Length: 438
Image 1 (tube, helix red, strand yellow):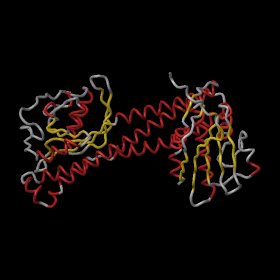
Image 2 (spheres, rainbow, N blue to C red; image 1 turned 90 degrees about the vertical axis):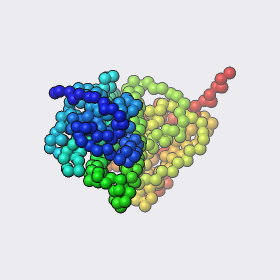
Image 3 (tube, rainbow, N blue to C red; image 1 turned 60 degrees about the vertical axis):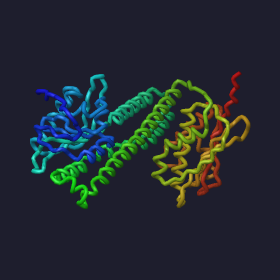
């Protein structure tokens, strides 16, 4: 493959046509506003795949500070030879056939060794006669989401390996169930991210380009007099706002994804701690633990329409192992969700409370208005293998009670009877007051 030579043209460069392409000057203010603000990488190229207009985001992506450093050059000046060659072939195929390329996932190794991933769509650029005079495209940087996918796969692999070496089968089963809860949230976030990445803005850009090309000869009059033309600036602003909002939304989902991956790592650490009977006992904030456990069950609670009531008065920290306390709370919240489903009430309510029954203990309380517990089962529900659910395994409450005892605490259950809900109370030692520094 022959590399396309690059030679930056002299003079103003934004949206200026190359002489070989025969392009006229596009409306500077209109296009400049769009290219300056859109977060995704936008670019227009001539038939030799040389940049003739670029967005500010692409300039930054290339490590440049001014469009003049990009205009007139090619991908060979900024990407690896393989990436640039593949891009050149794609663009020449579009020029030959007129067929757009949509949502292609591309990887590129930069000169500093970093690998980046881009989701790219490219279209033919036509003049007023319909002749193809170049290409234009949109690229979204999805490197971070790809890295998160890799981290998730690695965390899942670590979980499988940890499960194989764990010596306590009931703990392994409980941990896997907890990971399943977190994976539900991960799947939701991953689905949202995938949907957002597939929704390219290239089609809207293509329609706008066609409209502007159609009125090239009278662009000024069209933008100021024609009813459709007067809507173009507003449309561009709306498109830019939508792109920014979408990016913000996806970044939020990625942050949630990373937080849930961190929780999986904590659960894996918990199982490893059980296998070795070694754990770190430290002061922990009970309200933070409650919120973390709720977040790990958030997807299921939303799907089952369970309302959550929080009663977290300020109190002393507890003394325990974070992973074990999270395992217990996740189990209790999950069981409360099922109890609410089976209770038949029109409104499902889960209440979380924090109390201090004595000066040296703290209670973490999970209460539901669900199906309730018969009196004869209150002394049996913590036994190994006991369950009243068809799909239950009877390990969750048993392993939770064992974990509470290992932290010098306890779990108790209370219920007024069938249909009247239930209350589970996890009581743990309060952390001693911190010694003030001299």
